[in-house]
Image (cartoon, rainbow, N blue to C red; front, side, top):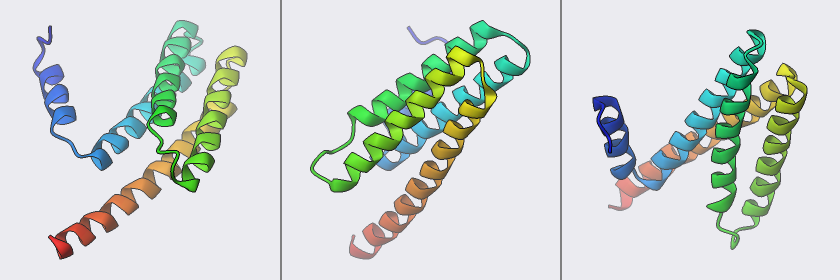
Length: 129
């Protein structure tokens, strides 16, 4: 049961978002958890590292699961997401910042690309709506 106002807001935001917004929320979450894991590495809080990298990997797995394989670009995105997950796993095993930072960098770039595409698509929708 959701009790906090913040959790209610988050649930409402997810339920009322369009697919582009949901995709950006997934990226935001994976980036946020990746950064939290970096903080854990810096402070030698390895429980924090494992927990947050696990959450980031779960989100990346969701990105993989939701790809539409009827598009060629999906195969390329799947490979990128698999590599990001590999980097998160390596970072967790080695408690290495560099691999987590590389993974976060890819997620930030992908998020920016999808945000730009969403803006362009929204503009097209407005013109044809």
